Length: 111
Image (cartoon, rainbow, N blue to C red):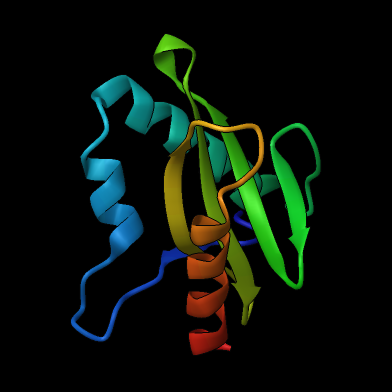
């Protein structure tokens, strides 16, 4: 049984940015991200190396994709669900401030 079921954040228009981002990935990468999210759903609370707190209620799921790429799925916990707010391919050591700010803005919308 899932301890923390995942749901996609939806824009007022109904678009789900993380779902769209996932659909843009290759099949193997989609599978990796999906399995990592599933592991968090079934094993919550879970820590490093798969999941890490970014503070203020924001969490990241850390995914190692094919071709030595790294992805992050930023989420928060609301009413017993993991809300997938934003996702991106990480190209720098530190999470880009624009990606972090977007996730925080979306989190504030739903909280």
